[in-house]
Amino acid sequence: MNDVLSRLRQTRTSNFAAAIRIFLGLLFLSTGVMKFAVSDLREAFSGQLTAAGIPLHSLNMWVVPAAEIGVGVLFALGFVSRLASLSTIVMMAVATYVHLVVDDPTLFPLQPEEPIIPTIAVALSLYILWMGSGSWSLDLRGKPVDRKQPSRDNAMLGRSH
Image (cartoon, rainbow, N blue to C red; front, side, top):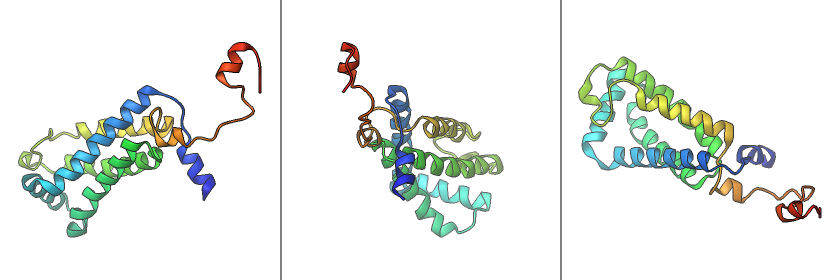
């Protein structure tokens, strides 16, 4: 299990990956919170689920926003962002389906009826799946130091450990 977690947490220093990860974190955290807190958006989400024929409506009304908040927090912290990316890809595949089958524009109050936002979220999640959490992440912070590699300072001086 530790080996799997270590592989999920592998990353490299990348400010670009970090910016994408933080953007995704804010996006999913805010959409999850809004589905709980804003009654008009909760009603629109309920209407989307019903119109698309998504099963387990009552369960999804709670699970989906909670999952969005959860992956938003994981992205924001940069902890197992690859796992969060896999989760968002699945959620956005369902969201794309909803956008394609629901033809009532009133059920999409803050976004276009076309699946533009889910498509962008999938593309960005695929990048994080490939790169990892990047800079400013718990994954990078928890990365074990490779003692076989010379440190940056020693490498600049031409010395090794």
